[in-house]
Image (tube, rainbow, N blue to C red; front, side):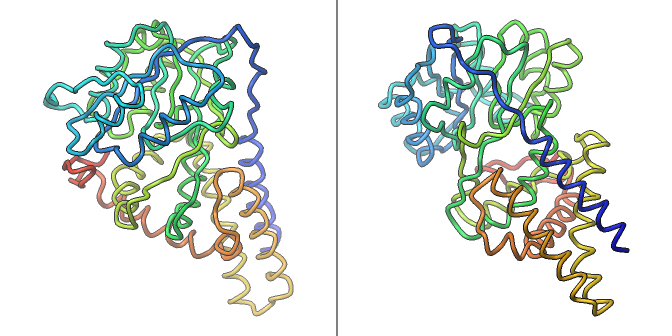
Length: 343
């Protein structure tokens, strides 16, 4: 059994290696100037941090567009006051999702040759924008944001973040950040081609590949951060439920098997200790798993040390919510005041 565990444990280091994707060095004065497009629905609490991070960058984008998707808060007022051009979204057409419709309208209104789509709950680290604007990108670039954990319940997202990153890096698209040339975007059909999808990033990645556009993605530590579901535990449950099972289904089979193998190995260690009573052997195994989870987790977010050391807790939470997401797939869930069908 210990040999099986060791092989499965090593799968975690294979995942960790895949997360290491350095960017080419940016050449000052030779950077692309993207139009930044931010779809926003009731994002008054998030936009100031993102827009302030953009205003503080040593390099500037061509323009910043905030597409106000029917907000009932001060989203439009805040965006305009901080220098962004606000576009009031037209009524949501049948079959479209709010985000894809907002992104589509933003792309039509933008005047740059490069389009940078960003979620409103992300923000750049100092100098982060410059690091992604190298003209050497052969196609589309995506960044999985570093999870800036602010509330204890967010620590439970640890393994969801691992799976999200594994399904994206090194050659997929993250839903929070996409930098793409306008002609490549149009060649792939843009957001119109994925207008009804909750996890539009997986489907858009497929269309870009079919159009022959190279994809590259990397982890965002030191470049881009986000605070996931800061409005409460219930908000986090709804967010992961709305499409996580479909996201797993959109992940390549090889990557999915690698993640599953690693998670099985993580569970074998404590279970074998309980069953055999050999806590010397399996205690060492549990310790090696804890250290591995800490190392990987800190690459992806500022997760609490204590919860990573007690990794079976967030792992069991992951299994439970993943199962619930699979059950809810295709059913109506509530997200940002709208009822949608989970992918």
